[in-house]
Image 1 (spheres, rainbow, N blue to C red):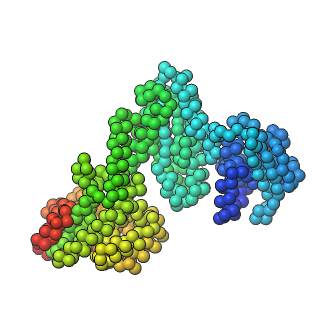
Image 2 (cartoon, helix red, strand yellow):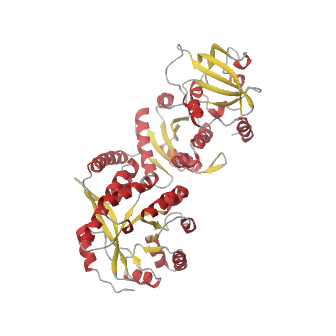
Length: 558
């Protein structure tokens, strides 16, 4: 992109009024263009006008009607204002549409502007536009038609369908706003266009959001797989968007004709299956379709349906409790609640078998509420039997980000009678630091409620203790990787010692996870850590087994 032209267009664009006026502009079914009254250059346009012209916003801003060849019957900027006339509009794909244009002049922020309201005549074609309004690329309908044509002309050749998505876009929209998100989509489209223009016969289109399609002929499936990897590497490089260097975390799904099918619909569907598999992996990757992915997708869909029913009915879930030992006092100090799912046909499933589904489907919020209330009720019941222990409950990112965690926790405590001081909520380091301001507000409200907060799995995310210092947290749970580092020797011991020294100065309680052997236990004790969790003492236990374990537990105090 010409950076100088982009800067000139940015200078031209005045800020539109916020609130209702901006909403009315964006959602109006009538196309609206704002032009500089002195130069005739477009400074803004709404989605309805982009749909009429099939020109992306970046292609309109800074240009005049004659430059864009929009008005075959004459430029409305030459009309006397105000006025309304029937005329014609030429879209990007060559269609000429009968329209009614209303022109009026006004002043916006001290700058003379012209407003053009463009309304399609009733006789205009009513079908969907062939191009995406934001990027100007072929939309899904046009793309599928062109793909069918490519498959017909390349009957004896290999054709690949690559679906490209970017998993970081929700975070971009949430933190930087939808305008930056839209600009990032345009930047992606421009880079993809550069990459595909050099490939004879290649087709590029946008489906929706950050989902793009590249279809191209090739000599072999191996060539397509190499192309997918090269495409991925290029898209993994940062995008410069409105002063931000954005890493958008691309994923690619590939299907190959005729191996995976011969119809556009079939190939698109199978590339979608491959893309879904790629998106489930935590690292940037390209996935090639294979039949096993379809079966896995069917199994995943069935499991999600079963999970949805189980959460709705509040049945089939089992909470187990792993002891946290206070070695200084020689007692069981706390119980971490860990969920299992007693599936009707698959047996007792560990969290790894279904928590990803719960998070991806949004069921994690209701599931977390069930676990919290059930665990609070169990610890309160133990207290009535004479066992007084603390309770640790994990909180997922979606539960924290919804903003209603505090009333949910308060309701669970009220319903079960568990004192707030007996509950610790565990949140990951990444969740707390991604939006530190929001985290600080919610954590402060939890502290007022009387609930403790622990940073879970410290050492696996940002490892930013300085950032955590500014948040009202009470406990730090060192990930099991710390224990593995200690066994490696070298500088690992110094890192752990310095971390523990700082936490003590900050008056944070430290829990060491993953202690599984006698040498590990002895090392932890030498470091002065007294709150210990791991298989050396016990695996997660049923409620009855935990009660028996806690009553019988003995360890020589350190």
